[in-house]
Length: 506
Image 1: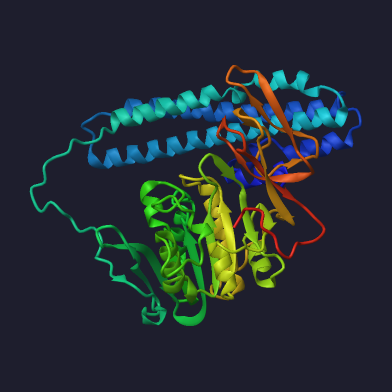
Image 2 (image 1 turned 135 degrees about the horizontal axis):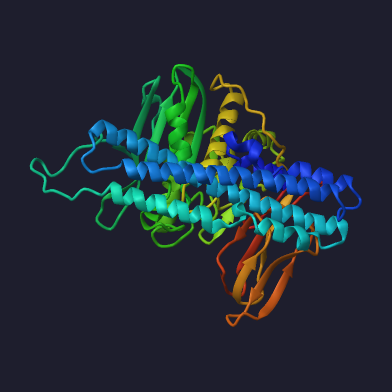
């Protein structure tokens, strides 16, 4: 994916016209043979002046609002006035967070277009224009960070956490109705036109108590396909959880044709421990379809499939990167299967990687049962990311629309996903301090430096180069590096699709 497409994904809509117009600058760059001369520099200066002016206006407005809100606050405010004050302060914090995201995107755009200008012109254009950018206020991240810190400190000071008081009534408060536990998911037994919640027991712990997974069943008013959505098969991969919550919250059961079955957390023991693997560390996505009389994770996997996922007709397995790594929004699917190829494109990801789903994976186990299944990778581990989640939800809605389960029209993406015939990870040979240079969802050319390893004393130990042209699907962000650590996940655009492919991604 090109940078301007990535920029479109992260742009704050109400500020869109104030962002660095990367696409326009690139057009000017390629239209002018003499980049060092005038037109590019004129246009570039105009763009960074626009960005800086918007930044300064927003910063000045936010500072004035912060001063005003701090002046308005007093401890004995009326309850209604206090709620209004809180709402205004919350809006201010959101504005400052948007400002931080805006500056980061524009600074990255400046760096990338100047790097491109150096390549196109054969000259060091960045040496002239780079310091010009660095001198502007929007390019000084400490400015908006300091203002955001000041606002958060003011919020904590004014809105003090109330002291705990001893309860005077019952010590346990029932927040939600008790949810039943079952050992088999009987979809026909759930009422039509309703959302039902149930615990499904898959195994027992050392006390003989059931290890249960949460399952949400949204049964439409009329019959139709059964679409299953699973998340957190790896216990630290959380972005799929809010996607499921939002989907279930938004669905109109009166117009839903068919049934949605959602499992917000598949790997409950791993979720409790905030770790990728099962309780014993085993990767559940390597032991599918499990065994009825196997090891602990194999029994858990076997019951997951036989008690829950076997009911699916279509399956979306939601993942993220693992700890220490970050991902683009991408889909792994068997593009030789028309059903999953269509699902992958409807998902509207940044990147689609062909992968037939080898044995051991949940997706592969579903495919072996004739269930059309894709894997959707939604950003980074151990966090919620609204931008990625929003686009993943849009893609799921597209699939439901194509299946005629919901009346919504399919959303046409702003860009065409990069379709990779295969992909692979590049690994380090040396240990030390790792720096990976390319950004997610950007292109690298064969021979381009992609990473460097320095010794703990700061000396360059080794540089790594792209073995061929490709797009950055994911990368390592952990600087602590041992021999054999992952560097980045490179997607390759090829002319044909391998029939059987096992590149380590399931």
